[in-house]
Structure formats: C-alpha cells, structure tokens
Image (cartoon, rainbow, N blue to C red; front, side, top):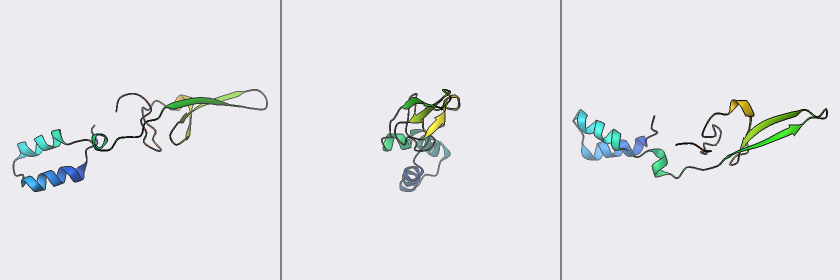
Length: 91
C-alpha cells in the first residue's frame, strides 16, 4: 500500500483534463507518496522496565517521539500508531 497525496493527484488530473484510463493509471502510479512530500518524523523504540515492590519487572517499549508506552510483546510495527513516527524498518 502507498499513501498518496490525493489532493496532488486530483490537481494533476484536473489540470490535464484526463479522459483516458491509461493516463489515470499512469498518474496514480507516478503520484508522490505523502512521505515523499513531507519528511516523516523519525524515532526509535526504547526499552525500559518498571520494578515492582516485590522485585518483579515489567518490560515495555516506548516511542522516542511521543513517549507512548506499549507492552514489549505487542509491538511489531515499524511506526508508532499514536504519532506516526517511523521507528525502524522500511517506510
């Protein structure tokens, strides 16, 4: 999936007075993605733990951009679902 800028794409279609399906498909394939237009935030997953009074540790990961915490076993994303920063992997 590619997150394209729909406003930019509609502007290109409107300016070109596009009438052929082939030309519309070409414009869609060549449309810049949102990330090509706007530099995305970049962060990283941090790891930390809470230590309970009885000595038990609860590990978690957090986003370095928004500091939202997630349970360590639940995060398999390459981006933060809260602030949208890319925290590793491919865009």
